[in-house]
Amino acid sequence: MSRFAVILPAAGQSRRFKDEHYKKPFAPLADRAVWLHTVEKFVNRDDVKQTIVVISPEDRSLFEAKFSANAVILGIDVVLGGESRSDSVANALKQVRDEIDYVAIHDAVRPCIASSWIDNVFKAAKDTGAAILAVPVTSTLKRVNDNQQIQETVPREKLWEAQTPQVFRRDLLLKAFAENPQASTTTDEAQLVEQIGHPITVVQGSSSNMKITTKDDLRLAAEVLKILPKPQRQGSAHPFGDDHWR
Image (tube, rainbow, N blue to C red; front, side):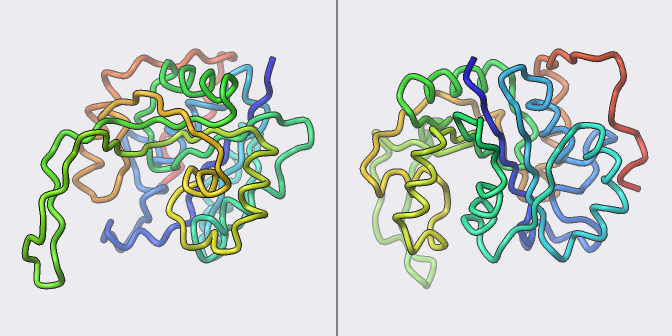
């Protein structure tokens, strides 16, 4: 069986979330923090041998106070992030165990991920070395100038919106980071792998695999979670308390 590590970046500033009490990964969603819903989808998989959560240094005290017990029970490694997303992922990559074959990066604030979608993108990565979830763009796209005026309509044919997980053969991802000195300017890991010339397979995702950006998204995510198939747990004990985020 191929062995996967999963990196969950949760070190962003959450500026668009606009909540004075919580950053997005730590906000309460259906009685648990957002990131706990997300991690639950991976830790009970037989093929996931390591899970790494990346947090901002400024959140370290909060995380240790509220979530250290969860991290221990779940066997999660916690890594401090950097100034950019790619810096944070690079820090986590340094902690990936030698026996790992594939690395998956999944936004900690995408809790509405179904096991079947993970199955599909993991399989595609094993077949091709690199794969991401994505959905076709269905809306009309407009390019605008600094004055908020339309400059052109962008054809949406063959345009897809990238999601996560993004999954790569470990050696391929390490090469992509090593050969891209401007990695901090990229917005996802697929872009890094693109730049070294390796093809990336796009796997059909779902609009339900939403990324929480605003507080309105929390309400929608709570409804989506109700209709997602529940992951199978290997043990009878539930590792998440109801009051861990209070």
